[in-house]
Amino acid sequence: GAQAVLLSPTQILAEQHYRNLKELADKAGLDVILVTSASKKKETLSPVSSGKARLIVGTHSLLSGKVEFKDPELLVIDEEHKFGVSQRERIHQQYGEIDTISMSATPIPRSLAVALYGNDTQVLDIKDKPAGRKDVITYYDDGKKVVGFVKKVLSEGHQVYAVSAVLSGRG
Image 1 (cartoon, one colour):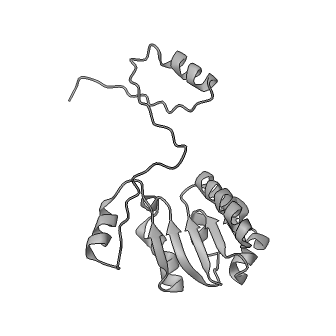
Image 2 (tube, one colour):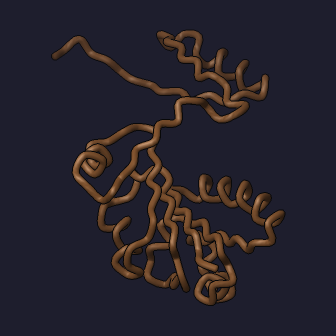
C-alpha cells in the first residue's frame, strides 16, 4: 500500500518513464500518475496525497513543497547528478528514511563517496545497453560536408546531434 516515486530531471524523460510504467501498472491494477510543472493541478495532486496513486513519476515539481505524499517508501532518482544534494534530501527530510535508488550514466564523486563511506549504499553496474538501443556514431567534419550529411541522416529518419566548435591555435 506504500508509494514509489520516480524523480526525473526533464519533462521528456519523466513522460517516457510514465508511459513505460503505466503499461506495466495497468496490467498490475496500480495507479500511476505524472507530475510535472504542466500538471500541478489540485485534481492531479489529490491521488498522490490520498495514496490512491501508488506510483508517482515526476520532475523537480515533486520537490516543490506543493506535492504531499501519503506513504512514500521507495524513491528512484534518475540522473541523480542533475539534482542538488539539498533537492534530493528534501523528500528524506520530510518523510524520514525512504529506500532510495540513485541512477547515473556516469559515476560522479558524490556517488563514489556515498558508496565508500556510508548509508548502506550498494553500487550496481548495468553494462548492457537497453534492448534496441543503437550505437552512437561520431564523425568529425571541417564544416564543408556537415550540412549535406545532416540532411541525409534526417531524411533517413535518424537523429543527429551536431556540435560546432571554433578552435584557435592560441594556448
